Image 1: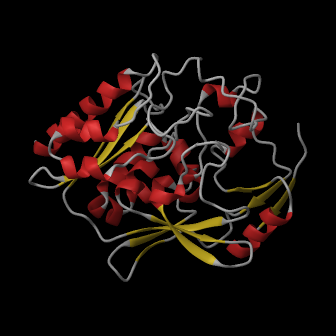
Image 2: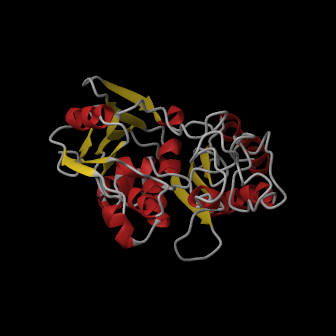
Length: 315
């Protein structure tokens, strides 16, 4: 058992300042990922700042016709909200595909964005992992890589971002609102929030040290059919080999985002422009791919999953 200290924050700015002031401090909300990582000593926080008491549990309409989702809104509450179900159905579908009901009851909007990769080499502290220990190497390169990335990866890391909710948020052009330790606020487009691994795979998001997520905002609804298809190794809850979030209009045009293939939810303007041409869109989404022998099948699986989405949209 590794000892750590604990406090309950009274405001977002206080939470951010507390994490900034103590080396090794972490925020804790639902704990659905952090606690697991603490148990296997991948995460070793010296101090936990509990943010559950903050007033960030509301879903509110914005002046421009969108929604503002508090960082502590549970996945269950978000997926069940009638405004989300009616106007942002792809988000409800992605959340429900992502985890069991018990986990959705605890998982939060802000925490979901920050969940860490499920690469088995990241979870095994006996293996080399640049994400867990920068500079140690990447055991996944040359190892078993069926679940891992094919685009946007680097020679330092081939892990994928594991979530489902963020794929839908990327499709919807969400914006992440934050507060910094000094009390300053900023808005980060979801397209810029998650980073490619590059030379520094241990730096996973655009957040600065101590910066705390307070909300996620959605623009006004897009209309069209909202769809989410997830392909996984077992039918019960598992992480995606490939997932496709899409909003398709009556004429077959639309937008698409992919999960399970990259360090971040993957969206390419050229793929949106190519719709309804499924092959051309899939080619744009996987352009520049560097698959391994274990995960080369994902190239075809992206196109097949997108074809399934388009077939449902036409039905």
